[in-house]
Image 1 (tube, rainbow, N blue to C red):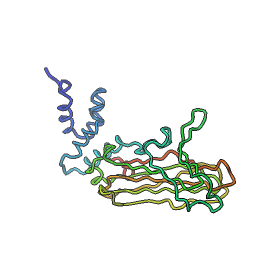
Image 2 (cartoon, rainbow, N blue to C red):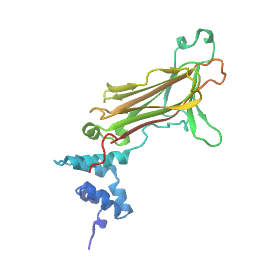
Image 3 (tube, rainbow, N blue to C red):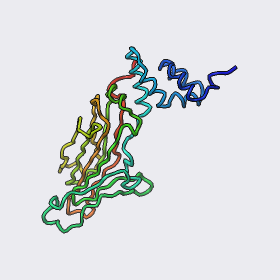
Image 4 (cartoon, rainbow, N blue to C red):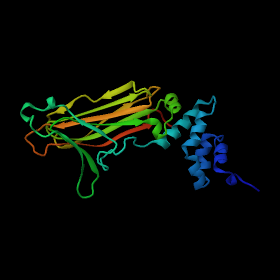
Length: 254
């Protein structure tokens, strides 16, 4: 006698798409490794999410599971292990240099690997302002348009930079439409400080709660400069950049 396990995978996915979400997670997912892999497939949850129904709690549960399953860092090469792959870089125009340093070489934006097997860090070796940018298309990471527009997930952005005397750092993030119109944005402002807390890593973060409908792309841009010209090793270190999309604003449906 044929069993569910004998069904082709695409037919089994069709059957599972009609199983209540809680049963999928708490029962079907525990049957075997094959079923666990099927339940974790985004295509199954996309089908369930698009099913018409009046149960708002059921749809919220589907969205919660989808977002938790898809959650990852959307920034590629966040720490510079692959040099400057995936990043767009540029430096400030000539006029940004101090008058007495106009003859210094142009600021080099590069990657630096720490010794003793430590993780690589992105570096901005700066006498001029160095700028690194990365574009993220949500659909490329599994976040289809309907999911973003109906659930309005939370988007969290984080970055780390190494503060030394007379350094400059700024983070700008823009949520963009399909036509690249700005729907919402964040800018950390100019962090140019001369305080006593020197030589330490600092985190900069922002959270877009309930991102607006229509978001299709995210522009991540940070800029840094070390202008303590008396130090020959003056450089700005930036690392561990991240963008995550998740249901952080609301608890798991009860």
